Image (cartoon, rainbow, N blue to C red; front, side, top):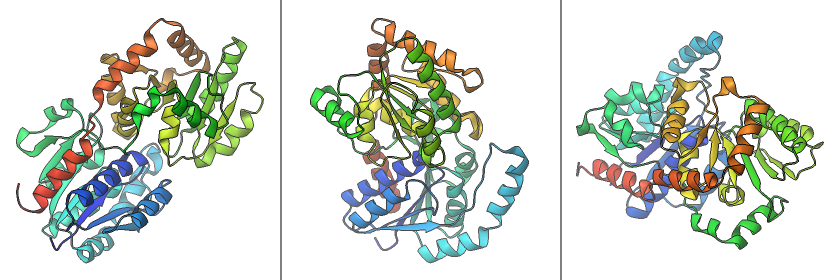
Length: 377
């Protein structure tokens, strides 16, 4: 196995953590394999990725300057797309230098040019879609892919069955069973300065945080206090908003821990009784692993794929959904209170979201990639 396997993705931890899980599994399954992990040089989780690359033999992290494409800003979106495609000669030279035998794209615009260039250079290509519906980059990459791996059975309807394989969404290895142990839950909460036996709400807006959710929830917490609700909060606000959220939450009486970004999400999930967050595919996979009840506020941009994720869970009774354009502090406070007060609802949400768990997703996808890479497929 002379040529390396190149994994590429970016834009959020939702693309990068599945890729790292697959990288680790490939190296575990095949002692001859070499993996190169290509990502953007400005990802919020790059510290975690660098640490894992240092810990693993035969894994090289290659951080690249991709620029930024932001579909939430229509006035600048076209210009950012043109600047991205202007990088084609540089990305082509990079992929020629890396000389992959197989390139795997995990979504995000960062994956588009490396996968296309790899195909032009004769490499085998794979894309993995974490969401129910295809994101823009993966949708455009389908014609260039030898294999398309998906995370939900519903996604298979978009393609012919010959090229598609259902693997689930690979996530980091967690000790999810620890959530059933009161000592483990208490220990995780104490790491954040939280009380071991108080109802805990975890607030998260993805790896970069969400200014909308940050503003919404601080106001919601104030309303819950006015209603004499007993709760505490672990709020992952992102690097941009963390200081502001920390300042605005100081007037609240409840324990309120604010962090910008946390590598070890296991402690967050062990601490939480209820999650308020986005509906990204990796968030959903991790919530399902821990059986965590959630109120999801889907990110309304990026082809609305989060909305499709949220609707799927809502139909299955696996999560509650609040659309961003309808989200107010009053409405969210009502939803939280009703969720806690309705007998058995938290337990039902927990049981139903567990049905979306694919414990062996990383193994499934890594095995398929290795089969393609070695010519077995």
